Length: 560
Ligand code: FES
Image 1: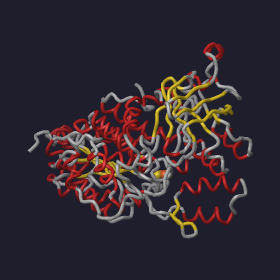
Image 2: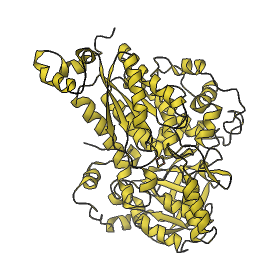
Image 3: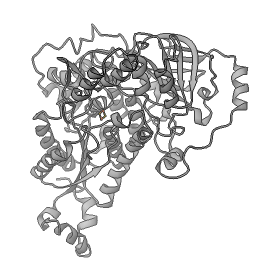
């Protein structure tokens, strides 16, 4: 018996002087017996803004049953969700990355204010899994996460589609390549129900990360939102929290440097979203683990890309689930000596033990997950670039393009909207490098994702002919020669702020370089002339965020 298991809630609900506190609980039907048990939060990222998390409130009832079966008293609370796919391409997107911090802060707020002994996190849409995992690392009390699962594949004239096809169809329609009727058909049938966007975009990537970090039950990331396996995992996750409380196992026992190396390895092997770079840095920051962009590039160089999923490949999370999900990828990596098998996880067992016990379906899978000896790419899906344009670093998803080297003239825009308009008006030519700046963590603020622009470029047939660099971010659904997270950002005078139309930009993913072909003296002269623009927001959440947020090379965490 762990003597600490009621330590936190006893401070709030134990002893005669806490009778008023117990009265509040009894007003909700709790008994003395309930209050004597560990009291745990069930943190649900939920609202009716979109389908990604819509089913999670229902699943929280199953989690509660699991908690009760393990001897705990569950209390549900919600954290906000920003649906990236809806906010995309608008001012609303500035709140997306902000919401990651709000999710983490909300969990800290409710769990600490009420002295809960642990918590279960339920998350779906892009920023909610990292926000929840940041809270787990920050609070460092027994906790476990369950990802909510993908939507089922959409359908367009008999072919499976995802939301990515709808974004790209907008570009195609603007060029007269498809009819309004086809665009409408896609709109009506791309998302058939609850769950997150179907490809290995940011949400599903972060789902894989929950398992790869050891913070979720093995196999729990890949079942679709509507699969009955979700109900089983919800129950087991609630029960597992109570075991964690019993043995006193905490997130920072799990979130070692080696656990982050495992997560980065799975990210690189799967060709997941560039956003995972930001999020893993942020979770590591909360866990007190020193992780840098160089760790990502080092691991990328040694990790073959073995997974064939959208946006770079052909399949969706639904397909990965049918062949074995995250455990299939992790088993292959472990057998090749690329994972640390001895790190502890929320099961109380090591990664190696978990994978030995996990039963994979006996079905052909090499069309989706290849053997290590025959990868899709010999190195990982993401590369870190550095150079005269990005002294702190930038990120390119090499799995989302066949092009490794691009040299072309800069077409400079100071916002996403300006760039989007130019693309739709056909003002971008082959070989151009579209530069979108003042969209960084401070400058945007909030590092908007450029999916509308990148999809329009792809939709116009310029996907492998036009490059784009930005101090903002990309959606996990972005494909093409797209370099994001350029740091330092324009708003703090990073070299991207000094670019002018026509400057020659060189993107060299083979050698990890991002440069502008200008003499040092010219860059220095422009830097001396540079005056930072005033902050875009003087009050409210975005103003607060812009003041506190750090560089994307540090995970865009809030510094206090
Ligand atoms: Fe929520 Fe894509 S918009 S997962």
